Image 1 (cartoon, rainbow, N blue to C red):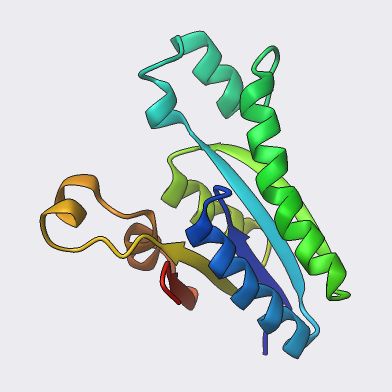
Image 2 (image 1 turned 180 degrees about the horizontal axis):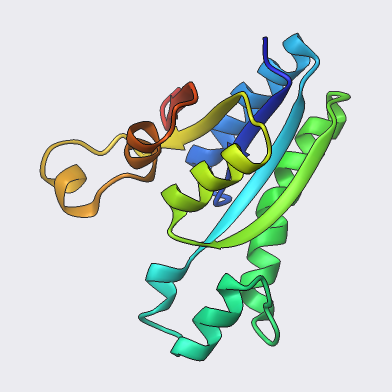
Length: 151
């Protein structure tokens, strides 16, 4: 049923809950896990110059060691959990608008399901802040398992 499972991660507690679900699903279906970290270039526009954001979008971190380390740490935790369960894992770091990067990666890599966390925001906070999970749900044709922070 599932051969490739995408687990987008930002290293947060919410993402860790999704990792557990995603890896268990991969174990059940003998699937490969894809751990994806997206450097949010919209957020970076506020703190970095245009040249640095363009480099990130091209996958070149250059002297941005802190960003690279955070990304590698987040995907590394997914990889460690998957490997502990005997599940094959692919780690990837990309840059862009998170929901677009997630759906693009899924499409380009033949992913069967996306397993991701949600901060469970509702009401005004959701409207003002938006939700990566909600945007992924609206823009992908794939099934998406959204894991709540309290799950």
